[in-house]
Image (cartoon, rainbow, N blue to C red):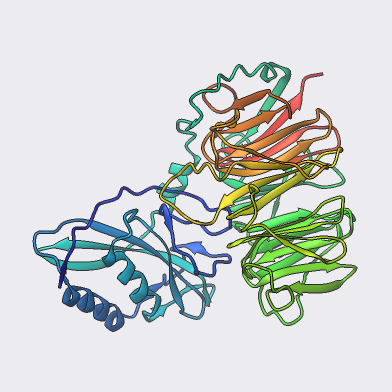
Length: 486
């Protein structure tokens, strides 16, 4: 039997650029993630006791733990059918015990969580400890109240770029307003999603409620005026060119035509867990899911998977975007492809571009035809700040430029969102730890966060803009508006 020393790794909370939350720094590939909740339900998800005890027995038989100490925590995603897979874990060293636990837990028997008398997908944490030369394991329940308090606390921004000096000359020209549950009807301070519609109404989804904001009044979406529960946490949303609102919640997709809500059913799919929704001026709505890209246009539905496109790296789609040259960009969990208007497919994993071994997670285009892509390095490491990420610029003449916190004024490489401001002709960038970035597309970088401005959080997610040029931003500590002083 092999002797192994387990290493205690601290609990670190990270968010992936998909909808599910990875609670630990090491993500496990192959776990098909759609919408799920953190340790929710009544009853909550759990393991079959006999099956779990067999795992403990197998590990203790295989390894000699004499004199070893330590702890490993694994996050297991359990779907509504009771199938489980390890989503993330705390062991950056990836030792043999952890790898065996992943294999065993993926084949363990599970009991799914139940909400409203229906089984739902949820994740639970399993803590394995060494005591008296034996490994033992137990469920470590998530304290959701502590989780929310921890993430909504603005904390101290983490600026990884230690060489760029941020002077922030434009900050004084903006008026920043923040709405929180203490000073408004916002149901929760934590949010990742906001969109402005054609009427300048802001649709804002929090972790425990969904609102419409007309600039003065917030209207709660609930069972009386929508398909959503009062404390619903939505997955994704977007507005199409006809001002229809598209909202994904759980495994359902809804459309609001400004008169009524309808449940949009995708042919051949009982459920659709959306990672992302994007709409464009070509009349397309893209639904990015863990089983292909769903394209809706003129009520016609097309689904693109590896069956239809052999070059598609994975059926798990992060993000999709069609640019003004009619090129379709698809970011998957295992890379990015581009399909031109003549249906020719281009791959990038063997290229010398910033898209090599990265997935696009957001994209915007300026009026000159330059396209900007947020990047996610899908080959995982235990680094929180990865130089392969940041964002890339593809100029109209085909030249690529990669921006990260080493070669530019970007303060951190983990980019959640991009927005091109056509009023000021600047790029706004939402980071995961360093706040909001204003980039003038030349050499001017500004970094706004809770230590130097009224920006309420260092976690910046979706950015949107109304017809007057006002920016609205989803953060982990309230809804923010950035208005140019007149």
